[in-house]
Image 1 (cartoon, rainbow, N blue to C red):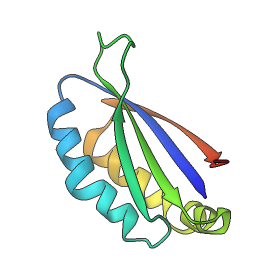
Image 2: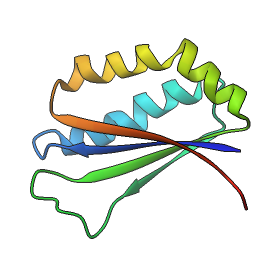
Image 3: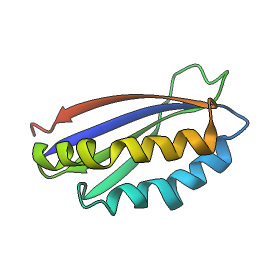
Length: 101
């Protein structure tokens, strides 16, 4: 199993609406690509929240091939939707991990 982790720092001015959008629109859109089985939203603790909260969203793919399919076919459009909606009010960092246990 592969975990696609997206860590996002969100500006206070959009935090509540962004979290709603994430849960109700963005994650369902990504899951509906068929590349991931589910997603988990986590809020980071013990970090500086002065500029806004930080979240990690972990998308679980059954294989590296499914993850690669998402990157090749869907990721650009999904990122574009977020940027068009929220502008520069968030910053995201991405990493890919393999589940070993």
